[in-house]
Amino acid sequence: MSDLGRVLVAMSGGVDSSVAAALLHERGVPVVGVTLHLWDAGPGQAVGRCCAPEDREDARLTCDHLGVPHYVFDERADFREKVVDPFVADYRAGRTPSPCVHCNQQVKLGRLLEIAEELGCAHVCTGHYARIERDADGAPRLLRGRDRTKDQSYFLYGVPGEVLSRLILPLGDLEKGRTREEGRRLGVPNWDKGDSQELCFVPDGDVGGFVDRETGEARRGAIVDEAGQALGAHDGVHRFTVGQRRGLGLAGGGEPKYVLRIVPESEEVVVGPREALFAERARAESVIWTGEAPDAPFEAEVQIRYRHRAAPAQVTPIPGGFEARFHEPQRAIAPGQAAVVYRGEQVIGGGLLAN
Image 1 (cartoon, rainbow, N blue to C red):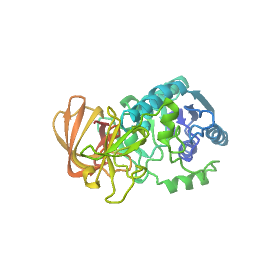
Image 2 (tube, rainbow, N blue to C red):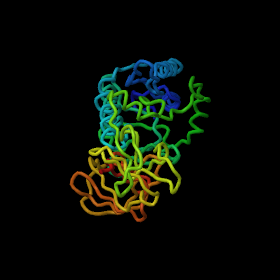
Image 3 (cartoon, helix red, strand yellow):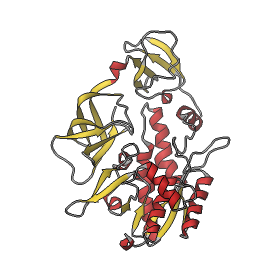
Image 4 (cartoon, rainbow, N blue to C red):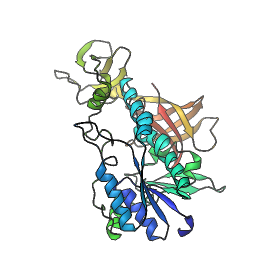
């Protein structure tokens, strides 16, 4: 692997990217650490891991331990424009966005490749749990990580081919426990650091509160049943997602109710029984295919959220997207979430679930 040339390693300050850098360094690869400064908390707000000053410091300490350069690039304006603002707009429109997908596609990886060119690096390395292999023609194929509980290929489906061809993922064949063991063996300063569980710009997990702070207003509306009968009130559709049960604030007993759909035009949240959440079909838009776009229906597996087990479906290409007809009905198909298409272990494309 030492013949890779100089490699830029994206350093978030977490254990995964630190171990990825240490593994390459151990194999004799010239490494340069780069941290993208993406977000700062506002007054009185916390900031999540990979955005906090201490994370940039952890990245620097790892690079110091390895004896390699470390650079920080300010990408806050781009992150705000391409990730945070669309995130807020989507929630206000009753959608459930996938900000990590947008960040990888539109901010992080493309920018890292530009910086790699500036620093004379031939490749970009990240700590994602996914794999890249070459087909018979030498084209890169994106595969699931070996550790299915940590697999992050879902978030990488839209990475452009020119980036994918120069991307290195050293953790793709490792389980998370092994990653920590390697970090400890290599003396990585943050090998026992906890994992980030929330979005870096919403560290407390309170999406509704974040959207309220960003917009400075609340649009109250009604919670209604499938017949349109009012059951309660809410403080904004951005506080709900399809499939949600908790936090509805509905009094009385009876059968548990779940969010079935969100109607931003009328500010209504429609609730109903669990069985009403299941659907046989889904439509995706803004689709990006890996390689040549298919022109006929085909069998595949479609993953409709990060923790969803990809489900067998017939996928039919349509202009700008695809339709998936699942072999078995799927629960809580939420508009705005990524729908990623797999053939076995390989990612072949993906898009965003449509209303």
